[in-house]
Amino acid sequence: MWDAFRDPATGLYCDNVWSDSGHRCGNYANAPWYANWYSSASTGWGLQINAIEVELGLRTFEEGFKRSLQTIKSYKKWPRDPCTGFFSHWTARDFGKSGEWSTIDTALGLNGIMFAGNYFGGEVKTEAQKIWEVPAFTKTVDINGWLSMIADGDDTLSAGNAPLSEYALLGYSAMFDEDLEVSNTATAVHEMFHSSVDGTSDPAGIAIHKRPQRYTQNGVNIISGPWGPYSTFTPLFAWLANKGFRNTAANKAFWQHELNQWYLAELAYWKSIDTDPDQKMWSLVENGFQQADPVNVHGKVFGCGAGSSAGGYEATSMKNNPHRTYGPHIMMSFLRVVNATEKDSINDKLEYLWTTGAGKSLKDHGHTGEKRMHFLWKQSLNEPTFQVHRVEGVDYGQGVLGYAGNFLPESWFEQYMI
Image (cartoon, rainbow, N blue to C red; front, side, top):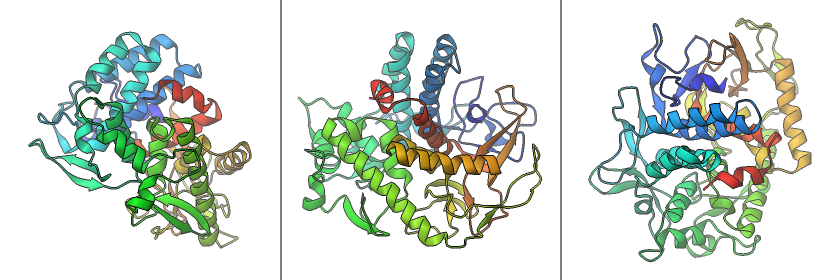
């Protein structure tokens, strides 16, 4: 399924695909306008996933090397702010600007580019480093911990985001890119808001600035940004993209514990809203698109995240989930942080959804040579007959990266992350 997001002509990854059509990424006969609407963040995940496929023997090293090099050389054409170097959120085959000059999407794209460079080495690494040097990551960080979301095109940035969110990965990118002889702002911010000195103590910013903050969510104590808790994808993005949450042994121990707390909060939250023992979800007939008998999913689902759903595109959270939308991609992401017992529990739930067909979508075509492919995606307990067809690459890719934790140790990812 993931390869349906990749345009074979450029190696770049599309923002979305649709399961109810032959839509895949690329310029083909009768393609819709969005068939080559590329996402920087999806492309970053795609480069990580390409390396994973090589490591697992799903592609040869030579094939993976060529694919990564093609992607990175195409990315060099991506439109960028001439003042700060941040890339646009989206682009297409004409490489025109689409959306804002996005700091977070630039960081996600370039974190993946550097992952590929570190994994494959050689020309891939050389070209990756050239792109890494383009954006001025250090300009995004304010000494009080606010992280700018948008480059305005006139050498200013705006729309600040607070710790703790997915923007933690942007802050670490700035720290990684910082010349300490010139400034230590990014390093100081990371240490203040996103670091534990001993693996058990909170980041100092919680006490000094009240950012991040602690919340009791369904009886479980967790950390999130102010006015949180935020959507569950936010700290998981930071964990999956780079080593910001694990740049020291103490920091890794702290954030792995905190992400486990978030997992427990998710389970408690879903137990509180998934109360019907006869809760059903649609399924499909064997290898077809028609709906079959619904399947009981009570106690089998969780995950508040981003992506299309019965309510349109939304980033659900444990305080705002009106359609009771669950996300298998969030379930998969937690495979990278939980212990062996909880990993078995998550895999049992995923296996149940897969084997019973509950909410299991089917997609035609793609670039893999398979005519049809099945996949799990977001669905709504409130709308158990409504099938979500639009699938976003940045969100679905998060699940692919998470599921890879069944096959590769976390130390493998850490070898190649910035």
